[in-house]
Image (cartoon, rainbow, N blue to C red; front, side):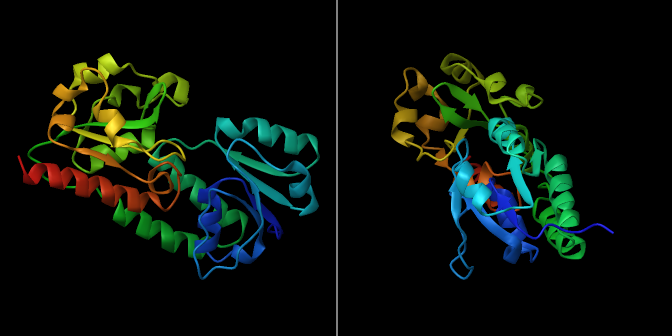
Length: 258
């Protein structure tokens, strides 16, 4: 018989969000500060950022499972394991991997039925747009110094929304360092729309528009630069449905004037 964990620490926001949705919130004893706890939900201690964590505070919570995400949190996971704590580290990059990870978390906490219900909604709300006649060229900026193009699931969402990711060739690059692009290459690929989310920092749209040579880009010339909140697009969990809705609205707004 598999015993589900009863004291869980979530160092990744999407895991905390998912456990709340599927009915396992009472077992969460600590979360990352990047998880925006809904007003009606009892708060839990915030014991980490994204690349930093309060190791002693985590140990004091006596967790029987700690959930981390991505290569960025690998050093945190390694230190927690050295301290003898149980860690689940995932590194999902595509929509299929995200779905599989959410299903895995549902099984781990014994909430398979609840998880499947939410996964059905996740799949339905991320359905591709059909019969798109014009696919605007989209540049997604994940970071501004250096410029980093969107991760695989962002590229997939752009394509599903009826856009053309100008850096789709980087789709398979799992590390951010492999998705660094030059301002000149962005200009060469000439995006119609620029979407940006800067990993926890507010996007400065005026700074993007003021980059040398970018004034000629259709996206800049026509004021099609949009920020998407990191919690809606950079956390690989259920909240991607909100990011997808925003991408679709941005693309629809562009089509309506062309």
